[in-house]
Image 1 (cartoon, rainbow, N blue to C red):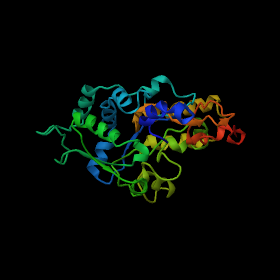
Image 2 (spheres, rainbow, N blue to C red):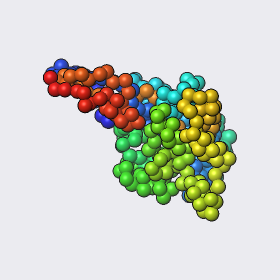
Image 3 (tube, one colour):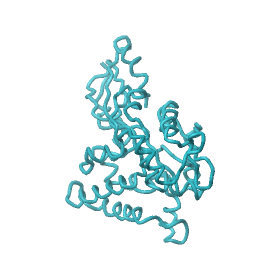
Image 4 (spheres, rainbow, N blue to C red):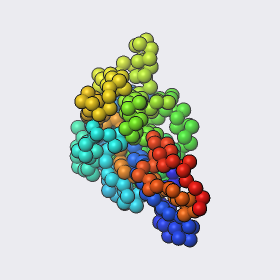
Length: 313
């Protein structure tokens, strides 16, 4: 999990350090999930409007993010399951163009008028401000949220940044008190086959990322929590059936395509970059180490490369 900005230093010292660098695919860039079930009714209405989420996606200059913070090694795209047959290149490009004119138009359509200072006003007359409490584990560097905040400021949305530790972030997710979270990683196909809930609310298998009141409603059979919109219920139905079908079958593809279509239409998870390599340092003293094609937690990092078959020269 080394940040990409140290790659030039590692490369420069490759010979001196007696190691070889590899850059296998491993991650997607940081993502954003707005709290559609926010306890503040005004923010809930704003974050719950898909036009707002579209606007926030269109306001991001992904090419600049890639060149500035990721050495140009990533690919601008939405956050979608990786290496799955039911995701197309067109899917990956959905709402990823840098278009502040369109973003402003969408926010104007929502009635979020700009005040004298250029910041848009909420329906209750307060400035529209996102409190982004982030953990470096999922945004890679403090420069990333700072850059994104600038883009959103440019279309009239104020952003307050606050770095917190991962545990606090998770506690606030579980109490439904975050405005926005970035604690999500796009799953690879093996994980999607066994745990499609990674791509349906609450977008996790261990703790809720977004939609806790919806899950309360589901698990209590409607006795508590909040009834979710129809698209959420449909995603749950898809996830339940998806686990039972044969991977690669016609029904598997149908369900996968529908899952992707619903998620893109509602754009709950907003992506930035894909195909982010994960720096892999291999000592030249090690023998029988293959070329790494992918390096991710979803494949167990080194597990596919049979570390039990490596040896010290």
